[in-house]
Image 1 (tube, rainbow over the protein chains, first blue to last red):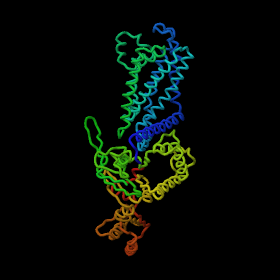
Image 2: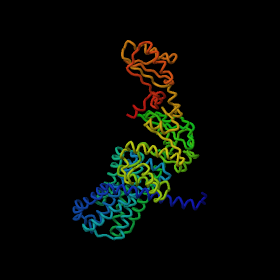
Image 3: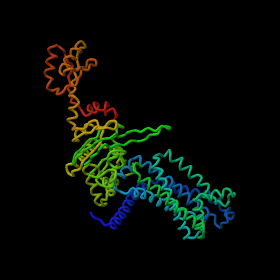
Image 4: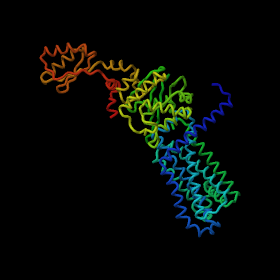
Length: 263
Length: 292
């Protein structure tokens, strides 16, 4: 088979997309066969929305918001994106233990496709959860710009993909749930507290606000909140930049981990 | 088809601050020709899996080299992967997955179209007498299915010219199926020959006499030892045993001697050496104990 350089690149691009699709549909099929995780992932934000949302309603004016849910729903979206995806790696540890990863790595399929197909499953799951969350928020009284909500969802998906990539890389490096669980918790808890997911950081004393400025996720939460109220200004710019930077870095790390032999 | 020279892999293990280098595979040479079926045996931890992982490009050798189907495992990994299939002993699927779907997906990852992968999958499941394409893969194989599987492996060679390198704990199957057996122990190949020649090398058949009377034990042991110059028979209660090359040729003479000495026998048994005896001789351990 003689291929000119351009043909070869086109061919491998096509093969890569195909392999990613095969891995993605296999992952999706297996996830749907046991949808407990999807359901648990959905119930959590619903509980927050139903049991915590009403507490915020009378406080809305103190954040300078007309509608409490334009503050609250973006926070829950990010929470969903971070927590749901950070635990994606646990599935990978189980697959590794069952020999699935090894079996796939012996095929000529691109190792990056093996990673990407899995991340896409998590992104799809997050998309469905995000839509349900926004729709439910609407039922509770959320009123926001449609374009803004779509943009906010997009940033959430980008963040979710990054976290899924990071989690998968961590899974392949540690190969142990026992090591992963405390690691993820110790990363996720400070992020949760310092990025104003449940309450905006504007309520915090100055030192805490300054501290939270160093947490990239806080800027992403701010950007999604700004998008929801249709304010396409500076917060959106910073949030988008941080989302892309985190995505590029974590995808790079995860791709490297998947391509490394013996991982 | 598979050629390895001085193939080695060592791992560094940390125990506190102390780093120790463990040589999992310590420079093995392997030559497997096109169309051969070669069994790869060894106790747990002997280096079987590490060797296979290197040959299948899952692990880079720390020294030495290997080619599979003419491609270097270290520098031409993708071409090697395109040329081989690998079935792991530890399984390769989740309990939630269905065998048929897994087979089709796996075929597709090798670049086969969905239609062709499905058709080949069906063909395969028919050959193996597995029902339809929705079999739970974790269900263990019954003896019939196992027999079908071995027949299938054998047919891979005859019909498709495949070269097969396999590890197993079922020695009788390795014996029946393999042209050649490699035994690895402590990271080094300790035996390599046809099953027949390996069994011959275990200096012969085991002759076991069970006597009726303890008084005659020492005389029986002397008679048995007389068959092979400079040897001694093992005595255990009323049982006297020893390995004798070509026991069939010696048996008549032995019985005449025992008769002449008025030694009464409760039973006599001659056992051809098995691969397990080979295993015990070259590694000092029994594979049966390992598997149990």
